[in-house]
Image (cartoon, rainbow, N blue to C red):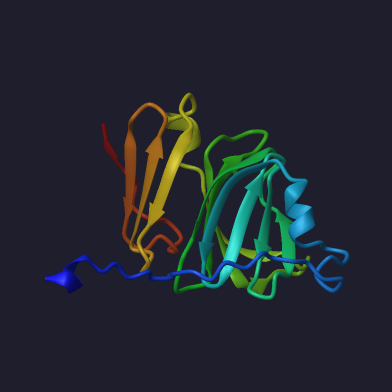
Length: 174
């Protein structure tokens, strides 16, 4: 009976303050550079912390706390989703001519300019849903389904191989 009232103190996390050394605070910056950003969204997956800012750039910090960045949109990054087991990153943002553009990036591939490889861009939201804004994104790990929530309460579901050139048109749920 007495052992029933004995509480155990379980530690799930180690409390340790992150400190930036001189190697991490180099040209591309580290933790101190993140403080200066107007961060709009964040995600984590595949060993990286990913943030998007108000001017359309995406920043990726790896396990060694090295920070890399690349321009993803012309205006701002709204939403991010990083796959946990693969090197794919979904971003939703605004360009000058289009709202709610969905872009699929690949971490481990780099294009000729040295930026992360843009695997695919989807712009099916710009014409039909130009008045609404994307507010939530979720992607299945096997990339077989993408759900996007909009500010008017509508949910769009894209099924099939999202990486394919022309996925099926999205299903609309209100």
